[in-house]
Image (tube, rainbow, N blue to C red; front, side, top):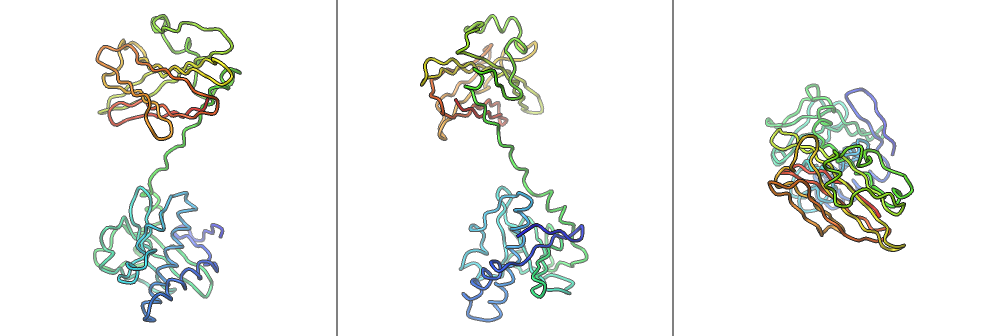
Length: 307
């Protein structure tokens, strides 16, 4: 398949042999021709919307959709597609020339919206005609559908994938964007209070990054300091510290520093009311990966590292 767009308010994709094959497989499960045709068209509509979501880089869960399970699609007239982190999107088929789309009672609730899909078997094309948030009357007029842009705004924003910071590259003077020398960000008072002091050896390096958090409409900024020291070819010491920024003398109470590896938390440090910094330290091996979370209330920032 390839993404094909036609009119500004529609989206057209080819009905491929595989799509036809899937629709025919599901339709053959049904005993009555009318029900088989219903399931067939519903399947083609779902696959058209699923392909649209792929083009929009929206994650779906087709196997979790009721339309992809035998009992629900046999007992009900449904054409749902599960959108991850959003809910069920109903994909209702119409034939060329139809001016409205019937929405069965069983799918008028528990839906984040409805996409009307024209199935044109003669031209081997499915066209997403538009979107509606609800269908309380059980009928959607094609001419009154919202643009597909209205659906795009409902899609969840993809979470940015954190850059993996490669710590051993720091020893060669290669640093990821945002990581600065400690002397560039920390105050002289903070530098003097840092117990490790200034280290100019080539087998150690430290960098700092500002972390911005927001709780109850109040912004809190802190510095995350990462200090690494190669102890041997197979052993690297990692020391993490969090300091306040600007004129703040103390960290926000209950700010947390967490270190995770293999899905488990193995370091968990929380600031008290008069802490000027918090820290933790551990050893690792080249190739080890871990994540660091700085959290305050419901807000958190994650950094990913590889030794």
